[in-house]
Length: 342
Image (cartoon, rainbow, N blue to C red):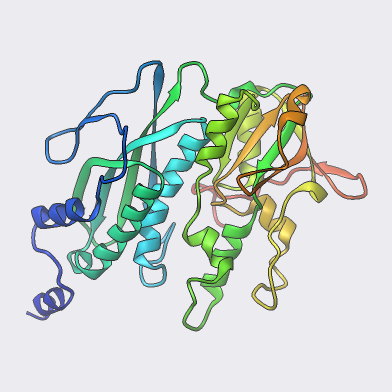
């Protein structure tokens, strides 16, 4: 009886059909043209038709309670926004345009009311902001909240940017500033009082912006040769790009764009360089540019800084060069879900 009263107080819905109706009502397709959907939500499966002359991009991403967000700490609308934004970052990394997505959602019955409404508000805002339509998915009941988002995108045939095309001598670039999302997460974890979720230092952690316009522009202008997004930290993701291309890299520690904590928000452990090298969930773009094309690249794109941080090398080593010119192997301390705890 007590559980039933709590559900009613939270205005939770009963049954999977009720949850689905709530999702369909909340996620509007208004103002999202050219989705490529011939049949969307409401049937056994969706039907998608890519535009003429385009290849289809497919990607999926988990967003798990306890691993990626804390149910009682992170605002539900931030969870909704971020679960789509982080999946869309993979589309940006290929130079593509998102078209539609599938949502698989497992949650307890106690969270099919206010929490679900907040989650759907954030998801709906992200859907409209990034012009990506909800095409369907699946729901089920579980003690913890598990979210999986699959995205369908498009890229003009032959223009997809891959990790495997970096060449020795090319210049290595990153977008934005690195380490800001990790700093936001640390501030949330350390806080012992009510947080102001509008704090600018928390925004990149709570509401990341996938670099879709930048990725598409780099692909269309054929400026980048290889590209990927930074989701697990520069020290983990750069080796992946180099391994795919069969190359190495040298990066300059003093060139890496870092976050600048204000006032007493951070702690002595929040070294900007360490955050930039090893902090995850930045969702910035890491890309290589042939030297002959570097002059065509602006210092910023739509207000997002573009910074040269190093060079691709023939030797397959990964070196970090400090301000004094001293070289050392790049330590690999970014995010790895299978790494054993010390």
